[in-house]
Image 1 (cartoon, rainbow, N blue to C red):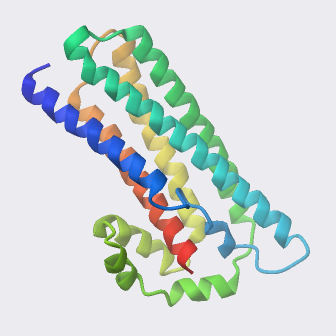
Image 2: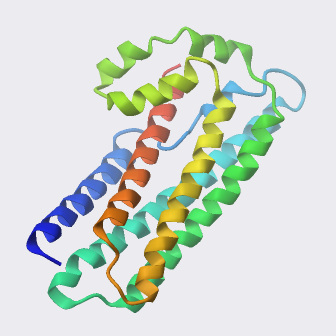
Length: 220
């Protein structure tokens, strides 16, 4: 790996690590939390349904963040390979852990999307979303505008169920990229930088998107 590529990968790893740590500690809500409160409306089963949906959100976030942590550890191994060589066995096991957790996240988000699709909206919460001042919120909190605009695109139309569909599709995209990287590691080859960048970009944008969703619901 050239010095230029090594320095570039260093920036990826450090940037991803800072992003994850900042996301974990900057706010009490991390990844799509509180979004289920926009569902369930009324009825005797409303409370238990909300509890089930919230459980899916929390469980899915746990798997997603755990997988992200393993992917960061993998990037660390790639980074240090310039000094000591890459231990392909350890790298492969790290990727396996990351992939397994992301597969678990995918399974949970599949159940979440199915449950949400069969749950009515809460009109009170939807009304708040329709009238929320998204531009003011973005500027006040200094949020990444392109990513927040995507969040706004869903929430200003009250599309909560579609949000959960995005969480699911994000896990599928991460898994597709990760399995390509794993194929290189299994062949004892260093993955191309471009695919490592793709993985980092997909993970970091998904994490930030889910956090912005949580922050809006926490605010309303």
